[in-house]
Image 1 (cartoon, rainbow, N blue to C red):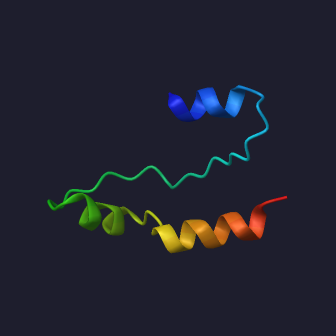
Image 2 (image 1 turned 90 degrees about the horizontal axis):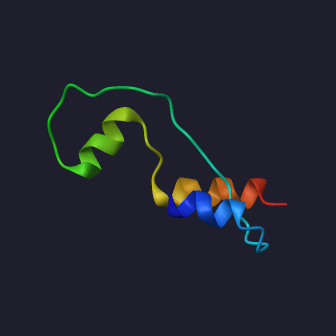
Length: 55
């Protein structure tokens, strides 16, 4: 919700939406393990993507 409010506020903040495929993990583990399991990118990968696609 907060991200949508910032994106739609019109205050000139650079905001990009990124997504991953919808996938349900049947494995148990902490949030870091689950993110790796479903293919969620790490912070370094997200920052690199943002730098490459920022206009």
